[in-house]
Amino acid sequence: MDVIALVGPSGTGKSHRAIQVANEHKADAIIDDGILIKDGHIVAGESAKTEKSKIMAVRRAIFVLPGHAEEVREAIQKIQPHRILIIGTSENMVHKIAKTLKLPSIQLIVRIEDIASGQDIERARYHRLKEGKHIIPVPTIELKPHFSGYLIDPLQTLFKKSRVRRRKLGEKSIVRPVFSYYGKLVIDDLVVRKIVEKIIRAKEFVKNVSRVNVKHLFKGDDDCGLQISCEVILSYGNHIPTLISQTQAKIREAVEYTTGMIVHSVDINVRALYVNR
Image (tube, rainbow, N blue to C red; front, side, top):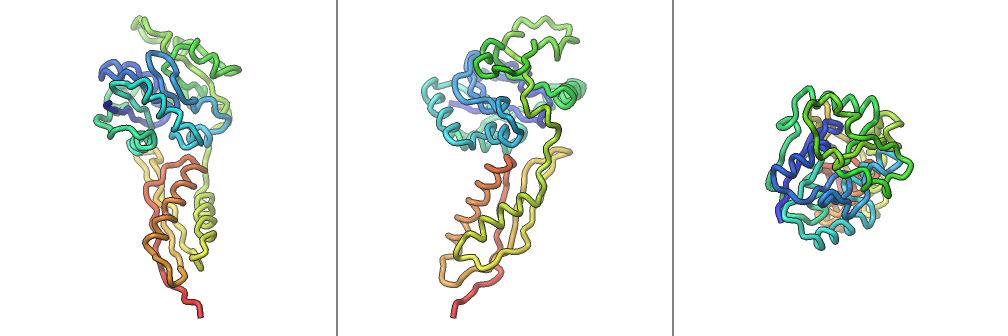
């Protein structure tokens, strides 16, 4: 089984071009926003577009919600696709999805800028930001059981200016998720710091935590994830490397699960050891 990926910032038209990329690279399955698609059918998973909040949508998209990854992994084993196309907003995201689903390493990454013009990308951004429209690369009839009550438009609404006759319009649909109506979501760094402090202070071997710092990694205007660092004072008599490693993993898991943001690194600096007398 081979794995390839299509990456680009949110709202730049990746899902619209997913079938095109899949056909060009002979991928017979697509993973997009939490669902596994095969031959125009949703085989497994649940679309992030069904979630009622942006945070839950991001969690769904990166398969961190309970049972979600397991369901999709089992379906992949059952259908045995030759090549899977993973769609994501960044390289880190698609690599994380591949790892979570226990797929082979990604062999090829296609960037949206390589297959779409600047004008096409700006038009896609407009429809996403101004109208809250999202594309899912499956027929509308396939979405009916999953999107009851959602506004589903024909694809011509978004791409009616195109002069190309589209014989496969039924393979894509436009939906308006509930979270699209709520505007832009901003998670303050204070939230992340509080999550880190709570996890660390709950450890019996930690006497104090300070200087919790949250740094954002940007690529252009897109936030590509976080780097977290802090200082701690530990009780003497514990195996420090083991404790630090376990705490780093716990912080990464909690921040990604709670906020939906990707955590690139968690650095914990042991400033001192406390000796009980």
